Amino acid sequence: MYGGGYIFDEPNKKQLREEQQHDEPEKLAAFEERIAKGEKIEPGDWMPVEYRRQLIRLIEQHAHSEIIGALPEGTWITRAPGFKRKLALIAKVQDEIGHGQLLYNAAETLGKSREAMINDLLSGKSKYSNVFNYPAETWADVAVIGFLIDAAAIVNQVANAKGSYGPYCRALERICYEESFHLKQGHDAFIELATGTPAQKAMLQDALNRWWQPIMHFFGPPDKASSHSEKLMQWKVKMASNDDMRNQFLDSYVPKIWELGMTLPDPALKKNAETGKWEYTDPDWEEFFRVINGGGPCNAERLQVRKWAEEQGRWVRKALMKPTEKRALPVA
Amino acid sequence: MSNDSLDPRVNRLKLGEAGEVVKVEEGENWNIYEVFHQEKRGAHHEHVGCVHAPDPQLALVFAKEQFARRKKCVNLWVVKSADILAFDVEDEDMFANNLEKTYRDASGFKVMEKINKFKQSK
Image 1 (cartoon, rainbow over the protein chains, first blue to last red):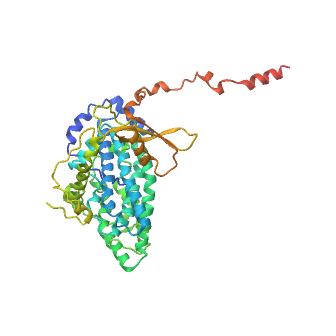
Image 2 (cartoon, chains in turn orange, purple):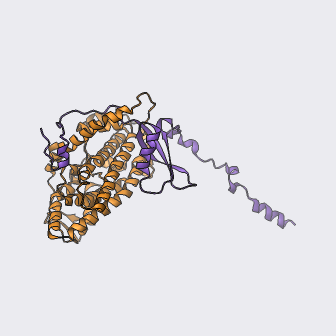
Image 3 (cartoon, rainbow over the protein chains, first blue to last red):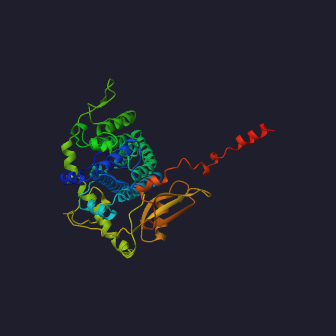
């Protein structure tokens, strides 16, 4: 559910550009023709080096985001208000972990093992969606995450589900189906607070104020600042521009926030009646890059919890390992 | 560095230093099994994805949790990904249909034409 629009790029583009030149022109032409016709690419197909690299990067970071995204919500299970909310949150958190596994499998079909992906997450080499570097301070934060972060993720994932890589599309189809439940239960919890006591409304307003900037960051830097997305669009790895997805999100969800009498901390936020586009104050993009590079309030905590889990579970995994068994990557 | 989380549950874990290296060994996430899902009695088992598991029995347990926790399911199959044999996708053209194979098709046999011709000749 948590695939953000922004995909962190590793700083080694130069080397890959050289590898890229080894792609045979005829095969590349056939590959691009197939995508232009709307056909899907499957794991055994010939594909450009750069296409494979970008897809691994995209799907792997999406998978990490699912797993890390379950952490701020997971710790609220014991403190969820009431039995129904607790059951729903347990189901949602289980779904997120399941999504992580579906996505790791899709990425594995491209040749990178799940162990290698987990190692890159733990070492900080591979990133996850920036929103999870912020804390979930109150129950209202859980409502805002379940409603608005899931909604933002759905905008991104519905677009990506029409992409060119078969295994990723199939995983996203299943993920989007479960996301619709996440969004609905989040919206329900959000409405309950928005229409509740003055203390509940104040708690929700406080959470909205704190989460608005991370939500505006979610789809990534403005199009004018993004590089190299033209090829990714042509290859149907990236299906919509950051600004278009952000606009689509604002169009669908700002009215749903305002209709409940809640406000958003941006006086410039309004829909331009002529262009049909939303206008807003540019969020602080320096803050976005500072947090992505480890400077956020929860970066260290998130990775520490993941490391703790790997260390605590290791004896079980090792006891069941069969190192001599024949192994292969997923076939589809 | 102590971990000062806002989350009391995280604080209780007494987490280690952020810089410590934790590395997962290749193979530690076990083997990969393809999962086939049967939605109802009488239907085919359909491929739905895969799970990591140390053996077929646990693969079934994980597959149930991953692929049968909501919608209808009456049965699951699992098989090691390494045991799947498939054609090379680059040989896809061998499945191209030969238009001259109408002798394999119901449409290749025009019985009514012959019956009508026979009836008219009487």
